Length: 100
Image (cartoon, rainbow, N blue to C red):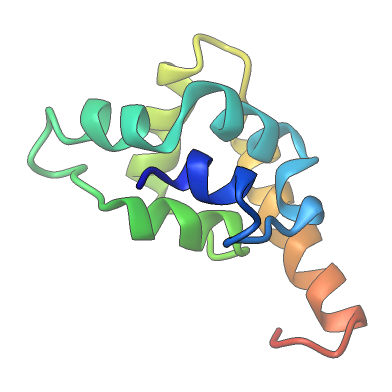
């Protein structure tokens, strides 16, 4: 079963705060599997889908990967948008009593 099917069935819940930033919206539109596939073309940038979901949880990607994401987005993302996502998500989780 694909994650999108599981989401529809209510098996997984998306944290809306993670998907409403510029970075989160871009990831949702571009697709996690596609990000993994594109970054996987360079052995130094390879990531797993779990790494991308960690970025969405507020753990910032390494600078080389962040630059690759900006390039991949064809200007839609900026480094500031990627790192701002990390700050916003961690702040909102900290406000809610979650891990910081």
